[in-house]
Length: 252
Image (cartoon, one colour):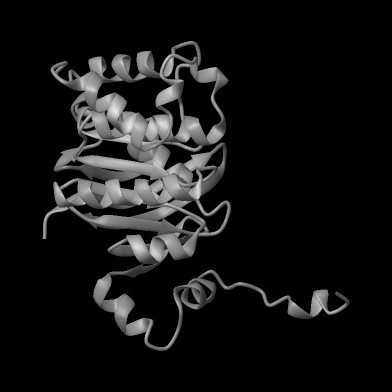
């Protein structure tokens, strides 16, 4: 099976503290991959490393068969789009100016681009904000603008860090629909989320990250087998060793 991302012995430190510890992970091409874990597990750090925004101390990373290094940085970025948490946007641009600028950087053909941009903005109910500066948008609208832009640059790899946070319910369903259509086109999508139900219903494979290491990798076959006897929530609690605290709130 072809891999979109291959990670071996990845170590990432902040000062002297290791956040990612000899992490190994392989993500098949053309899948929707879910990365779940408690706060502080290292999910956003891993996304930051894959985007090239964060350096790493040790290990090897390959993205679409290219080693992640200074020689390949530009080539990898040209096939990768990312929505970070919070999204990184140009605050003084209008929404449509931001889209046009990013698409220009990625050298997306201008023919029909504006029509597609307005169509997607309409789909996500932000068309009325096209001429509004980014710094005036709500957190949910900012997230949707980032998502629209990421779709328009036609990536092979789409990294989504908490993409549904602050987004309204209707738009979440529409985002999920677009994500599934991108998968049909061969795009690999990596999603981090605290909402286990979303990951469970949307993703093909799921990895559980805890204390900087992959504690479990659940492909569609192993998930089906494990979930005969337990929910994803119960499986998650097992691997992250959640402390039982029900008795603490007996007074309620």
